[in-house]
Amino acid sequence: MENNLLEIKDLYVSAGEKDILNGISMKIKKGEIHVVMGPNGSGKSTTANAIFNNPEYTKKSGTIIFDGEDITNSKTDEIARKGVFMSFQLPEEIPGITVANFLKYAKNKITGKPVKHFAFKEELNQNVEELKMDPANLERSLNVGFSGGEKKKNEILQMLMLNPKLAILDETDSGLDVDAIKTVSKGIEMFKNDENAVLIITHNTKILHNLKVDYVHILVNGKIVETGNGELAQEIEENGYEKYKTM
Image (cartoon, rainbow, N blue to C red; front, side, top):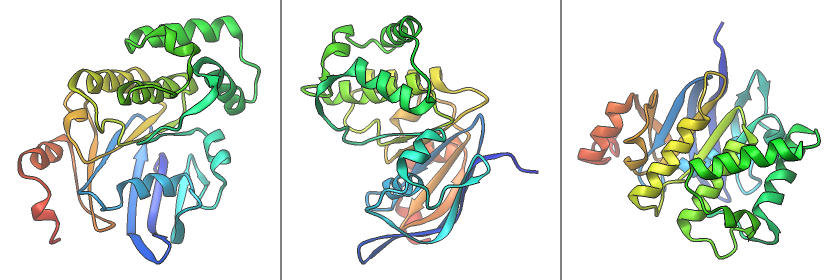
């Protein structure tokens, strides 16, 4: 029996009148890192949003199974509580709530248990140090006035603190310099273990330089046209997507 953490079966998704995903299927097991790559407009971010059942997208057919449970039509907050995390391309700014308080509140909602203050603070400070973040940011309003790199590091910090079963990273590397990309990669390595999985969505290969990925899926026009290992990403870096656009 296959032990898939996430299984997407023949998924068709539209936004408004436009069809975006045209029958994609994917299986992710615990302990694996998967990457979805493709040119702009190919449906990469739609895949992430469909898993989270973003109401802006309509599932026309297909199913999504997470940890043995059908979540195709589950609400977004229910999916999060089941252990799915998603980082965003453009993280929201939330005035009036500090980074530390947001993380404590989110952890409480996910686990359904009161957060033990001292253990939480110790873990938070350790992760901040590992990610080379400014500790002062913890007392600032969430993402308000943060640089692009600080916002993306903040997303990785959330992933580490919430410790989901599946982390979906949607273009977390976009707009980052080399050092920030290395920090994001380090955060993924810190998070990853045999009991969880990571789905990285990107059009860039730089984030993959410091990671050992298990599978790379090439998405073009809403279909997965090729699946391989890390060498496939290297080929894309050298030659681009041109040969896949006609498949």
